[in-house]
Structure formats: C-alpha cells, structure tokens
Length: 134
Ligand code: SF4
Image (cartoon, rainbow, N blue to C red; front, side, top):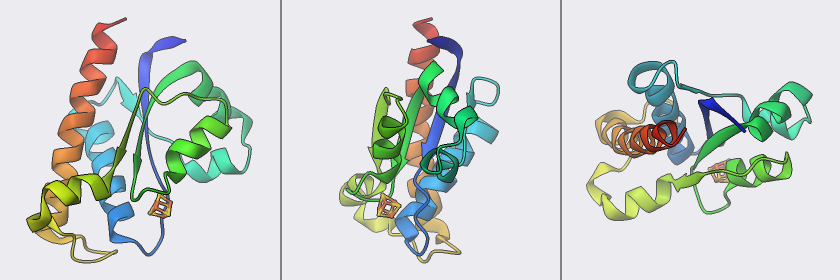
C-alpha cells in the first residue's frame, strides 16, 4: 500500500443534488484543503474496468463520498479491488443538518455548499490521520 496519496472518490450521480454536494466536497478537499496528499479519479473509469484507475484504488488509501445509501462509489471501489478506509453519505449529513438542504443539481446553493464544506472538513481530517499513520 503506497501511503503518499489518498484518493477521494465521489459517486457520479447525475440528476441528484446530493451527488452534486458529494462532488463539491471531494473537489474542495483535493483542490483547496489537502492538495498534494489527495487526489480524485472518475468513478466511471473504475466501472468501465480501466486498469490504471483500478491500480490506483488497489495501491492507495481511498475515501468515498456517496450521495445516498446505494453507495455506488464505495461498491465500485470494492468491486475494483480497493478497500475504502472511510465512507461517507451526503444523506447522513443532511439528516443531521436539515437546514442545509441543497437547492438543485446544477447549483447546490448556499446550504449545499455549506454541507459540502462540512463533509470536506471531515474528509480532510481523516486524510491527516491517514498521512500521520504513514
Ligand atoms: S450513491 Fe446514490 S446519488 Fe450516488 S450515484 Fe449511486 S444512486 Fe446516485
């Protein structure tokens, strides 16, 4: 297991605002919060059997962010031979923060952005723990 990089992989739900929140959270982590020690990859590549993507999730630590309880990102990482060190569901965060309901798929609105930020904070903290545990 290579320990220099954590892959943060959101589900690719189209037409669901919760999936849009998950993607916003993932990009917040890899681009703004923890660049250099985190990256993401397109879940579709995994589902299509792309060897390079499969190799990445097998050799690195992975955190998944799913929009709902169907857990598409988590299941596809597992199907590709990876083992997520941690898995999140936007729906679980929404249950705890009912006032942060995303507005829509294309524009998740202020509430959705705040929800994404909460998820990103938790994921960033987990990355710190994973990196410290080198
Ligand atoms: S986890 Fe839920 S929101 Fe995400 S792709 Fe699957 S069904 Fe869609």
